[in-house]
Structures are given as C-alpha cells and as structure tokens.
Length: 503
Image 1 (cartoon, rainbow, N blue to C red):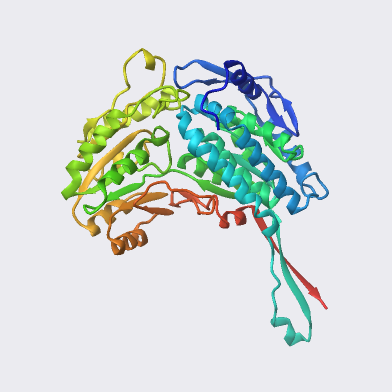
Image 2 (cartoon, rainbow, N blue to C red; image 1 turned 180 degrees about the horizontal axis):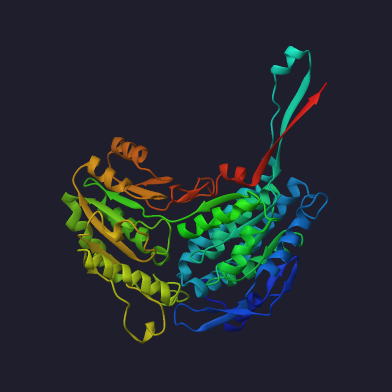
C-alpha cells in the first residue's frame, strides 16, 4: 500500500464514477434524471452529484439481479469453486486499488486515511478471502429417518442448502466500503445476487467497488449499485417483492421501519443497529493499555461507530487517574482533513450530525455532567466550513441521564466511577442496546465472570474492537438481529430444502 495520495486528476476520475449507477453491468443515470449532492465533511464543499434513484431505478436493479439469479442465469450456473475464485479475484483487486479506495472513503466520510489504510481496507480484503473459501464448503446432510418404517417404507432423505435469492444490502455512511463488503461477501459466497444501496452521504467508494466487481469477472447483474435517498430508493428496495432478503446497518429507528416494510413478502431481515457500549476498568488493570484502548474505543472513526465505548466505568481507586490521562490523550489528538496523513480524527459526516452531537453535550451538562475536555467545535481557519467536534470527555453524568442511554454517535465518552463488580454489572446492563462491551482486569476469574454476565453480542477483555473475519459480529436487544462475518452468517443467506425419496 503506497504512502502518498493519488493525484488530483486520478481522484477526480474515481469520484466521477459515482455520477452513474451500476445496474445489470451498465453505468446508468437515474430514470428521473435527478441528482443529489455529496459534500466533503472537511470543508462543506460539493464533491459530486450522484443519481437520485427512485422506485423505477430499484425496479431495474432488482430485475437485473433476478435475471442473474434465475436457474441457468449468469450466477447460478457457475460452480461453487468458480464463484470462490471470482470473490478471491475481487479481494485481489481491492488490495491492488487500496489507496484509491482509501482516499475515496476518507474524502466521503471524513475518516483518517491511516484508519482506511491499516484497518478498513485490509479487513475488507480479509473478509472477501474468508468467504471465498466457504463457497465449496456449503453442504446439506443425509438424515436417517425412522418414522415411515412403521408403514413398511424405505426412504433416502437429505437436505440442500440453497441461496435465498436477491439481497438488498443497505450500507451506512460511517464505514462505507467495509460495511458493503461485510454484506456482499457472504451473499456472493452463498450464490445470492445483490443490490447495494449506500448512504446518500457517502456513496462514492461503492461506485469504484462496483467497477472492480466487473473487472473481477463477476457477471453482469450479480452486483448492482443504486444511489438515492433512504425515503425513496431505500424504501422501494425494502418493500420490493422481488427482493428476498434485506441486510441493513444503521439506526434503530430505521431498522424497525425496515422490519415493518419487509412484511409484504415476509423477506428475510438481518440488522446491525446501534450501541451504547460499556467499557469497564477495574483497579488492577494495566492503565497504559486502558488509556490507549479507551481512547480508540471512544474516538476512532470520530466516535461514529456502533461499538464506540461511550460509557466508561472506572473503579473508584483509579478513576481520577484514568480520567486525567484520558483527557490529556483526547486533547492531544490531531484533528483535520481525513486525507491528511497527520490527521488522527476527522470531521463528522454532516453539519446536522455535528450539531446533534454538540447538542448531546449540552444536554449532558444541563443534566449535571461536567466537561473535562472538548465539547466544542474547534476554531481556526483549518476547520472553516467543516463539521468537526473536539474529542470530549465528560464526568458526573447521572445514571438516568440521556447521555448514558442514547447513542450519541460522536467523539463523546462519559466516565463514571464504581465500587463493586455487582454495581458495575447493573450499570453496564442498564441499556436497551447490547452490541459491544469491554472489561479491563488482570483477574482471569473476574474477566470470565464479567464476560458471562454482560448482556452483549461481544465482550473484549483487555482490548477493544479486536476483529477477525471468523468472529461473529452482532448484537442483542435493540442492537439487531443476526451476525456478520463468521461461519454462522452464511445461514442468513441460505434456505434449507428437505428432499425425501421413496426407495
């Protein structure tokens, strides 16, 4: 992966790809001819106008996906081994074009370029290669049956695992490319076809991804890319009778709306939604590791992360030290344009979202919390027009305050002291979310007790956000349905067919 950015002209060419949608192997404008603007969150400037797709464009994309999925179609007719090779080739192309994709996501979402280079892109490649290996290992089973023997019959029974069909993959704006890959890879591995709908705020890297799927040799219609507003293109996709499954990452509110909209043909739904993750520090923990981990948990991806460690519970004996050290770390973070190599935290996605995050800081202060550091939009010419928020550490928040229960989705962490294991477990589980959690302690028995008792889809011990393609990722409670990455996620894209043959 190179250390320098692409030239302005090459970046411009990649951005212009997003001026069209990719449907049935062709680059097309919206049927209405309408477009919507995409802005650079670092300065508020216009980056590109993308098609404002609507129901008619969704119809075209779903028709293309259904044609590729049909028996004898371009995708269903390939062997599992061939599908695996094509997925692996796509991974190679993403690796070869890593810097191009990193720059696009950094411009579009504000993410620091180094987060893209050293996590998002490598992990995307790994996810594709992991699922490429599964294509030849999806099997049914032979089942001996007993009941019909009483009727004197002999039978051979087995199951088949078949792709569910056309998948609508709706992608959020915080990690556009990685979230698209986490949905695309298992869908392709199981033999499904896909219509990708990126968030209207950050669609441009998905256009290059669509082009790379074609370059990899994935047949036309297997991967389609439609841009547009959620209330138009998104709703049309979720409600479409030709869609067999929806996979969505985003807000709880939108996730619940998708569940209601999917009832028309009872399509499958998997959801990765919000979080309010507890990050629990005991007084025997390695505090150097804690500070680095707590800062990454709260401020990576500008805090615009569903697994952000936004509730920091620290045992009273080390509370003051942890808060002071974390505040110093937060104040030292370099803010700036995501594409600048020195940037450690970029802008938030939009002016509206920046104001929402700062509004939560005001709510917290109004409810008794105190700002230790941050809590403002930074001043200076380098931030003019951009949607920046300083890394923020709060203390003294009441257990019932809104900032302890509602997802802020920004670089804001609330630190709270505790005394006992029982007390902090009650605080940690007092949430409608259950996506991520962490425990920092040198006591192995305590670590296992806490991991078992915390109500969450994943618990990290003495680390935060450790990820791997083989690890199940997903939540409990209102954090969603189903899992991403991992072997189990394949079942989200498969139907089981039972076959019984009289002998």
